[in-house]
Amino acid sequence: MATKRLKKRKENGRAGLCASYAFLWLFFFIASSVSARDYRVDSQRKFDAISQIEMQPGDTILLKRGMQFTGMLAPQGSGAEGAPVRIGAFGRGKPPRINAKGKEIAGLMLKNPSFWEVYGLEITNTDGSDKDQGDLFGIYVLATGKEGTYRHVYINGCHVHDVNGMVAGKKRGGIHVHVKKLKKTIFDDLRITNNRVENIGGVGIGNDSSCGGVKLLEDGFEAENLWTRVYVAGNRVDTTGRNNIIARVSKDAVYEHNVLANSSRRDTGHSIFCFNTDGIKIQYNEAYGNVGDRKNKDGGGESDRGGFDADYNCINTFIQYNYSHDNLWFCGIMKRPTRNVVIRYNVSQNDKLGIYFYGFDRNKEAENVHIYNNTHYVKKGLDVEVFVEGRTPVNTLFENNIFYFEGKGEWGRKAEGINTVFRNNLYFNIEPHPSERQPVVGNPGFVRPGTVGSDIDLMTMAALQGYRLRAGSPCIDVGLPIIENGGVDLLKTALDSAGADLGAFEYQKSKLSMGK
Image (tube, rainbow, N blue to C red; front, side, top):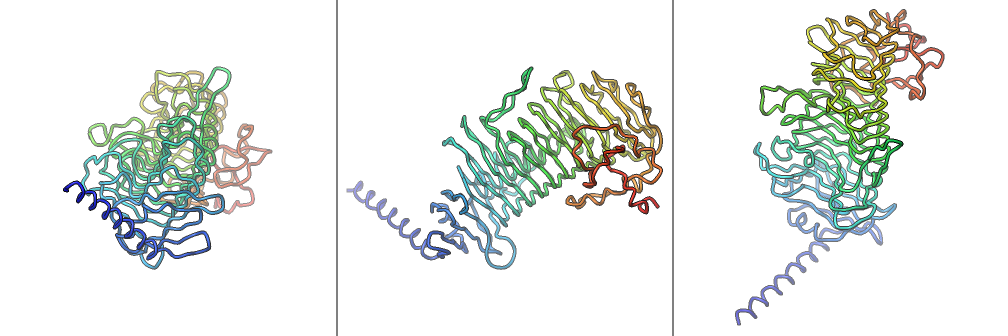
């Protein structure tokens, strides 16, 4: 008898739940066309229900502005070419906010998604403490359990903040896209753009794969399951437990116009680095505030605390047109297997301990590193070495760079390096590198050096114009010609094929007034 009553209650419960969802379906669904639906979410009850409904191509989930919802939004289904499923907001007021409270893996989770677009949400995921609350995310995109190519996932204009405590970890954090426990799966057409990601335990923006990678061979390389059409741009990532951004497993990805601030509060890590990539371009970004103290157990020590990093298991890496300042150093180059690294047309201003950091110092596998036409500026009072922490440069060619020290510059204990050659660089208040055979020594004649602040306009990079050259500069028309030099300087000024200049900026003869 008791068993029959229990069975009856379960059946009634299921019927009641189905009826409840059916009621909600009718209550907050608005037909936008014959085949697509708009679901307007303006209560916690509807928020809880929407994840039970399988979305169809063209459907839209709209959360009401000015409202807060508790828990995790985890919608089902997929869109189609030309008819993505969209998640956004309606009404007036502040963006709708999802508070996962550290009790859910994410505030928004998309599992095995294709043709999804997310925009205009605010998401938090913390219990309010500074302790480690587990592997949490703000927005988590996960492919698992089903092999394939997952296409067209766009995350735009969201504010993801206060995720976890201020803790470390590379595979958790703000906005992450992962492939897990799969062998032949990629993402294609992934765009993470114009988001604010702040106060994040772990990494601000990251991706990872269980099946993608690059392996360098003696006569070439092998790559498998690299993601395609990856674009990460216009994001502000500020105050993270580990790196601001990690860029993994991609072919010809572009990471640009991102502000990378105050990373690695609880462990070491460069503001942005690449891993298992082919042809990545890291460009037009600003990185600052990556500093630590060996005496502070929460500061994570000093190693791996620069703005940019060409990491290993990569080929054809471009770090170009960036602005680094007030980190411990500008750029890392890892000496485990990496090949064809180009670092060009960047400005480093007042990075505190050094300029270049060669990681994994006992290794020598980095090949064909070409560093040219960068401008390095160090104000008086900073004790800066070009090669920080006594690291040994390897297999690197430095050409057409400017090394400007207001005080006295130092090279570092092992600066002579292994197969490291300097050609045609300018030196001011630092002796030319021992390998240099044609140094340019003297004041480069900048317009207004050392005056650039933080949070510059990364679309124009105009704030950096103070590092342009005045008329009469010894840097004009003395540069060595570089094959495949990108064609433009940091401000997108066309390079003069008849006479290359030194540093990150091409001298413009038509704008002599700038030097007055």
